[in-house]
Amino acid sequence: MASRSLKAVLTAAITASFALAAVPAQAAADPDPFVWTKLTPTYTATGAYAYEPFAAKGGYERTDECVPNMGYHYVNPKYINSLDPARPAALLYEDGKRGKRELVAVEWVVEDKGQATPKLFGRKFDEGQLPGHFTLHAWIYKSNPKGLLEAFNPKVKCPTPKP
Image (tube, rainbow, N blue to C red):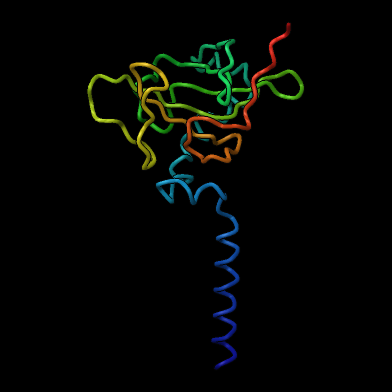
């Protein structure tokens, strides 16, 4: 019987270590430990936009100004003020290695009309980045060393302007 309980304890310990290893490293810094699970509808709704030409078909309007440490914003005006995980107001892209834009993040944008700061995924939206609006980013397509829900990602680079 002692051998059986030792096997059970070892099995449980090994299973727990594999489960912990599967959790993304940046998830621990986020306010909601289940944020990755809550982002599932976001992945489902935006995954097709990894192919940048589909963004326009989804109502996202392309921009050609690259914001340092964020990328190019493609905005769907219908989704401004949305707190629905499946309806972010913006998709963020950066120039890829082959000259095509690659999806790196999503962003929710809520107009500031004097209400309390909105929350999503256990995190308050950022204030002051976009005047008159609250914003929240989720770096679900490119890891962010600062954190999954941080506004800026130092890994995202804009093209160097040509002289």
